[in-house]
Amino acid sequence: MKIAISDRLAFQGDLVESLMGADGMLWGSDAIDDGYWQTMVFMGQWMARIGGGTEDVQRNIVGERVLGLPREPSNDRTTPFRELPH
Image 1 (cartoon, one colour):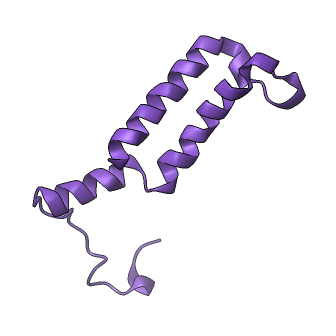
Image 2 (cartoon, rainbow, N blue to C red):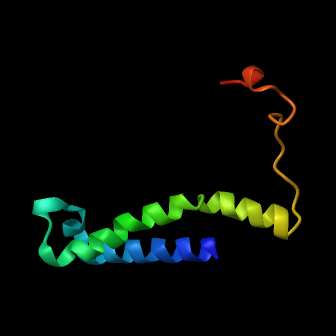
């Protein structure tokens, strides 16, 4: 569900910005009055997409828990944090 919603929000945000063109980059007093809600759609997509975890994280969760795929290999489960490369 989260993946579908974030994909839809990304599509809407990209569509709105492409329809507005260069005017879509304006904000505040420089923005056109008719474009306020379009800019909010574009900016709001990032809050919704990041807030519940990125799409990659959600896809990993579905793959591991639902589809039973193996986890990605990593050494950080057995290595103490102070010994991990920074």
